[in-house]
Amino acid sequence: MTKTDFVITQEQANIRIDKVLAEYFPDKTRSYLQKLIKEEAVFINQNAVKSNYKVQLGDLLEITFPEEKSLNLEPEDLNLDIIYEDSDILIVNKPKGMVVHPSAGHDEHTLVHGILHHCQGQLSGINGVLRPGIVHRIDKDTTGVLVVCKNDKAHQSLAAQLKEHSITRKYRAIVFGQLWEDGTIEGSIGRHPVDRKKMAINERNGKHAVTHYHVIETFSKYTYVECQLETGRTHQIRVHMSSIGHPLLGDTIYGRQKQPFSLDGQTLHAMTLGFIHPSTNEYVEFQAPLPDYFQELLRKLR
Image (tube, rainbow, N blue to C red; front, side):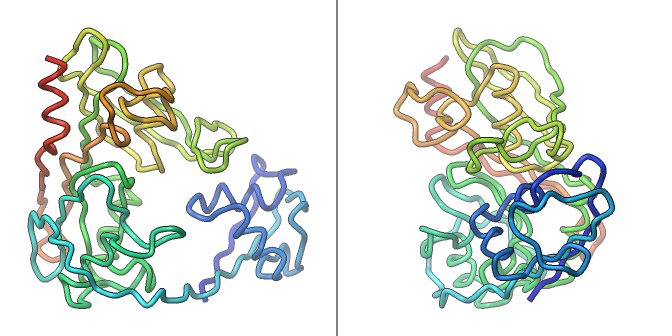
């Protein structure tokens, strides 16, 4: 079991406890958090409460997450595209359509299944049995470079760098509309107030987020950009670009429902990943080439 506690701030005061928890743990569903509250795994000032309890300034909130049960993960030979590998890290070029780790509705063919086979169990265990070696993730339909940690030392090093926002993360994307100048988008990101499956600009309860974008090429109806993350929030690029009126091509969640070119998800590629190596303490940087579909789309737009 994992126990976490934190003190309620002025900004969170008078908000339902289940909503506060949803902001702190965006990877957990509201129903799952409400279930924990019902099972008295959540306490306020050492007392069990109900889901409709409104937290107050200074409240001590404690939550205990039960140990995740193994789904009897079976290693799978998924013919992973390995960019680099040593005794500490594995750099993978994730293809479109592959989920990073098991979750509801995705209990096979995930990246975790593939790295279990490739690394033969030599993976960090910090993130539990369902996410061995996983220190960060990218969306199912986002392609590109991702680092996997083979031991806890490497995992702790990379996790600290992520927390400090010192890792270099550059993405390539195609967005709707014409952009002619580079820019920076700042806007806190949190759960959408109505659709809990989505993220949104949420200045009240969201987390600080900054995205820098650089115009690479402008077409008649679209723009090819490079986005560099200063922070790493869920769906950050997709939410930020949509917020300025330039949603990603292919993104039916934060953009248009009807999309041209018969795309399967957003045109987003994690191109560059750079960080301090956990053993050598030297800066290393890796790149994943644009996938074929992305290059073909650029050819059509030109």
